[in-house]
Every structure is written in structure tokens, then in C-alpha cells.
Image (cartoon, rainbow, N blue to C red; front, side, top):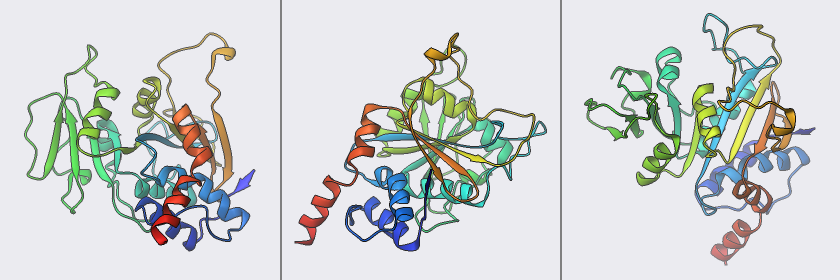
Length: 279
């Protein structure tokens, strides 16, 4: 198992790559630093097309909260830092309204250097109150995707879409709406149902599952497939890099051919472009 070492110089290189001002190939890296680059550098590049990353932090027994809804300490400190790094890499972070109502997340970057992504709430019926933490005006773009004609405070963008027959929104239309707003690298953070719907729609290029060493025994699952299979032979088996990130173990799953190309070639073109810019 690889052990990632996200040193300050590694993370600065990731931020440079995200800004189009650095390459991931040059440098004398330790094995742990190279492992960290393998995780984050493919996701930081902006010249390999749009992507959507699903992220789940869960217990050993696959839970994301207790039966009473306590989810605050599921991930260990390094699992939380990993989540904040993904936020810093993304153009936008997406959550469902149930997560916004129950967990009241801020969706900001606080545990690493980097800019806050745009905050996107999927709220078909307009249930989220205007004073929710995710909608606070802190200079970051705030977006609500909804079906109803509900006004939002000044500065909050609304993407209005038609609902499906079950009252939900089509993940493909949500992504298309975000792309129209100039947001192309998307982190689908939660909850488990929202991540699962994007997965079922075939829209996730990568899935990160950070497993913390605790057993809960009950409560909601981190991943809920809508499509049921009758045989394990029919179960998806994505290419997976298993990595020790400290307090948690990361399963870095590659789900599409585009993601595979990104992961296999993240170090080549970027290096050439950087060398050209430096010459």
C-alpha cells in the first residue's frame, strides 16, 4: 500500500498546477510525495476536460453517521484534510439539500491552503433557508439548483431545472447547468444518496472513499446503489489505488476511460507546457 506524504512543497505544486503555473513531473520527490502527486495532480489539471469526483468519508462498516445522525467525527483528521484538498482543487462542491439541512456544512477550505470552491446545493423544492451556512455571503459563488420559482438573496445564483417523475433532479442536467456557469471540475461531496445518483448516471470520473478505523454498527450507508445486482460478477470493479493518508485509508477509484487517461498521463503534457512557458 502506498503512503502519501502531502508536504508543503507538494501541495504548493498542486496549487500551481491548478492555476496552470506548474508541472507535476519535475522535481526530486520522495516516494511518499510522489504518491501524493499521483492522487491530486491528475485532478488539479484544467487542460484535460471536465470531470466530476465523488467523495465519501465512512467507517469500516460503511456508515457515514450514527442512527441518530451524528456524522461529525466519522473521518479522522487526515481524512478531513483530504476532503478540504479536494475542495481546493474543485471549481464547485455539490451537496444535496438533506446534507445542507442536517449537517449545516460551510463547504469552505480551512484545513489546507487554497481557494474556496463555488458552493452548490441541490434543493428541488426550495427547502433550504436563506440563512444556511452554505449560503452565507463570504465572496464565494453560491448556487442553488431547484425546480420551484423561489427567490434567493442577492448574490445567490439559481439554476432552475424540471423535476423527474419522482421529484428529484437529473444529475446530467445539473452538471450541464454548472458547465454553463463556467464550472467544470466538480466535487460531489454528499450525502451518500447524491453521490450514488451521480454514480448511477455514469457521471463520476473518480470516486474517493476515505475509510476511518471505527465501527458504528448502524446508521446510513455511505454508498447506496439504485441499481441492484443479482450476481457479484455484475458488480463494478473499478481500477483502484489504495493509499495510506494517515488517520484514514483512501480508495482512489478510476471510473471512466477519460479518468484513466487523466491518471495515466497527468505528468506528460503539463510538463511540456510548463517547460514551454519557462523558455
